[in-house]
Length: 125
Image 1 (tube, rainbow, N blue to C red):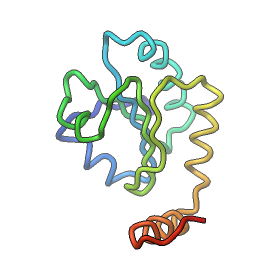
Image 2: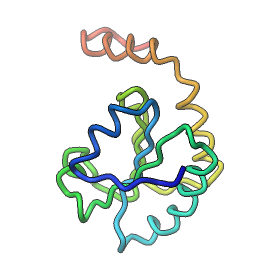
Image 3: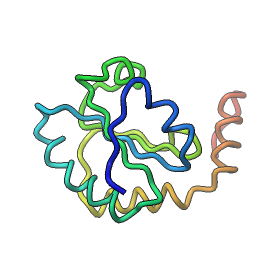
Image 4: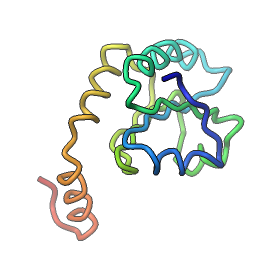
């Protein structure tokens, strides 16, 4: 599957309606963003079961601000609507492949339990 363009209007629904969504926050003037784009596109073809989405931070400023984007590129990974990865900086292809594998392998019951424990003030394991 090729990458999809997200907008302020489609971001939330895309994250909610898909099991795994990777979002590349980028801008056309950003050199590292342009270098990361073909790596991200290749990953989208290698993992058609994962939505690879791009959000232009210049054109979609509301979501970029709401997501707390302060540096680009920033990559976020959502699994079952939960943010499970958030990092600024372009990843090399092997690191992106490792990330996709790690997100696929997450035990989401454990993730939800950890989130619930953290919101109740319990210490993390």
